[in-house]
Image (cartoon, rainbow, N blue to C red; front, side):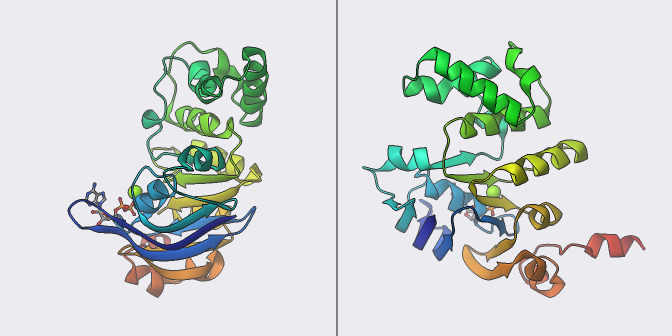
Length: 241
Ligand SMILES: Nc1ncnc2c1ncn2[C@@H]1O[C@H](COP(=O)(O)OP(=O)(O)O)[C@@H](O)[C@H]1O
Ligand SMILES: [Mg+2]
């Protein structure tokens, strides 16, 4: 379970990225975090793993986020960044996925087995033998996901997972995410993607929660979406007719 109480993220210039947000994500729940550019999605995600300093309380699987618990929190919460290039810093795919496990000094034989299982789960076995990172954007996204998944976090956070993806890679990622049993918080302005991956959506505006409820109620509410600068599902299609 992920529990957030009165979370506030204040940047050095005093901008509030997140402003007094409280919410709970239950075990196994997938929640979409919806909001226009600048609403606070990235600020929220980055603060949950202590990349950005914050005030308030965050509990992941009962552990309270603090300087002392940071490394433990990061074993509970995995983040898939918006740009996979920020996550892939080793020269080969295998080394990127092995990196976290080597850090915790897992024996190489075990690492190899875990990576094979992870690649199979994501249906990217072919990529495992690639010796460079010369792969497509969609493949990079899956490798970035593998680097997080391999550490077996209970909670997974995704920042704009469909950014830079073509429709086929997007569809594939959608199926992969839906097959993961993890507790998930998915920041996106891709509303159809949110509708297909999350039963619940939280709408944020100016760093505050504006609405929290069933995706089927929130994502199709054109008035509500308009108030938050997000285009509701169906608006574009209607314009075409
Ligand atoms: N490094 C920063 N310094 C100051 N303000 C920032 C910084 N990063 C983001 N912000 C501000 O925080 C607010 C939330 O931004 P962000 O979390 O990136 O939103 P989103 O991910 O929803 O687009 C915005 O007003 C943005 O301008
Ligand atoms: Mg963002």
